[in-house]
Length: 500
Image 1 (cartoon, rainbow, N blue to C red):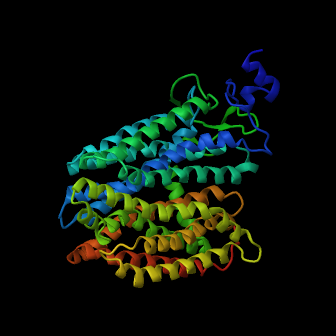
Image 2: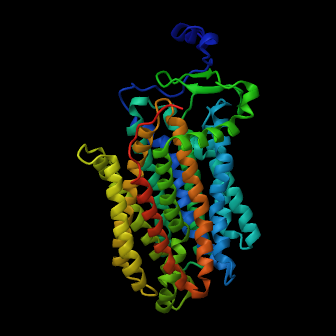
Image 3: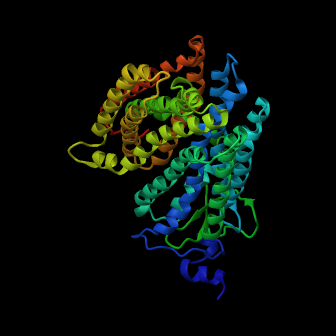
């Protein structure tokens, strides 16, 4: 019996139901169970994203320091370049996400974007350290950011395609754990390079990008071999007007009708922005929540963009290493390895504590809102100690144990905020509007990530007369943002909302 006849037998008329005449290439799972192996393999794409970004955020500011030298505007330039990926993401990532919903391909609807985007991103990533002219470096970073935007949405959207709704939470937890392991690997690379003898200064800069790029290609190869999406067409790549959907019970692909008529599709983006303004204006608690989220990500995006520079310049890691080794290459390896260890001290506790901080929010005695307030107060106390005691103490006087301890005390409550904010977001959303509320959340999230490097780069520029001591303003800025986050979050009085 042909696949077409199979569809007629099992699902009725393919024409009526909109099912496409293509057999699934992966075995569907019982809706009450989760295929852990497949979930892990699907998560490799998101792992690739965080693997690249963690190393990018660590190393690119250091490359820019070398290229810009004593340029008085270097902090602003660095901020703009580090914000470029978020500008591109806000501008075009929704476009590629929408296109993947409409893709007809013999490889499925998400994998073409994952294959093309990952391959191009890996190539551009490897090239980044070889470009020592500012304009050329900006161009390569732009192309890398563009390539990453091609598959970032698909890397997340592919998971619910092949996971039952009952298993979303477990699958998402696994995806987040696997993906954040990529972040840890990215921070480990400078430490590993630090143990390799006889590396030139050039190879210290280039080797990490090469390793990460090859890992990205290796992870892509694993996905191509083991993730067999249901075909949605008989060509390599074609875009349809209708959206496509994967039946999570059978893994069969089908077409679904858009709610908007064709003439309305062109106005869809404009309409969504009007809807966003309408929702935020009409839902005060949601507006307070979004403002709190904006300030929180404004704080920590600033740290991510400038922390490696803070470690090398303010803590004096390079100068101390050079005094110890007397050699530029060895000093660079040692200093970057130490900076990488500080990144690990920030990232590892977040991953290790994710389950436990989530359980506090699930506790009926505490609740999610109170849990978030506890974590915000915890952060404010830790940041106050960091700002007024630790940071002044460690200027050109790195104290590894003290810095690692403080970064742990800051990162754990930060993960507590992240983990518990999503359920609060879903509680705030009226029935049937979880999708658009989540989209608005990410709009504010990405806006903060876009503004943070530019804003904090400008603040550093204002204090440029202080030299490397200008980084003294980093943690006061972070503390201010978290205090603002707590103030706005505390104004949320209720989660109920009325329909528009």
